[in-house]
Image (cartoon, rainbow, N blue to C red):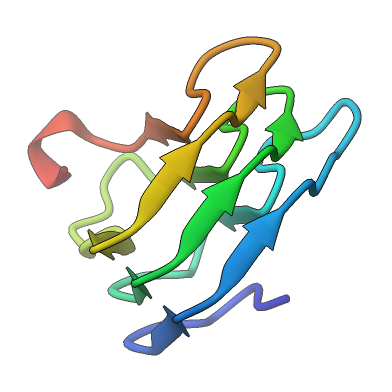
Length: 110
């Protein structure tokens, strides 16, 4: 878990299998990334991963929420990259059965 002040880092998930992970009343059955104030310009690379039978309230396989309460911020929000991943039979109570992306940052920053 990274928080307050994390910037310009690269996090890699490569050749992983996420199967039958279940979270109740939370987003991201397998992976949940919440990017709040003071986390900027981080990159999450998810490559050659399999997401199967995972469940969450939103983003059954993966959830990413971007949030910045500083309306004058010009920093670049965090970024998520997917490459060669498979998503099958993931479930979400709300939206995003495979991947749920939620943004509360300036539209011009995304």
